[in-house]
Image (cartoon, rainbow, N blue to C red; front, side, top):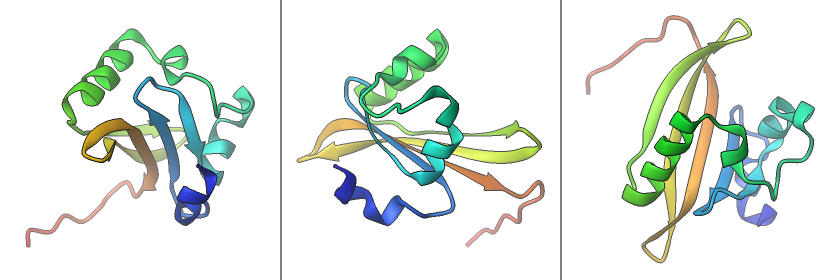
Length: 111
């Protein structure tokens, strides 16, 4: 699985990928650094470290194929979180989360 995500290893965002049961398959360098205090999370179930509300959202995305996006403030940084299912042969196979630091003020364009 690691080689499938070589493109993501050093991008300026945290990338985490799980399967349809919530088992973490991949974390890029930034994601591993972000969650280092919890040890190696690859192979663990992400439902174990999320609230019931978050678990329900993840299950909904995995069941419907819908995406979820929101912003947070954490340790003085503003971040955008984008979660979306990924598919294999048209069937939902898991979920990808991309977390990136964004500026406090960000331009918005209508194109």
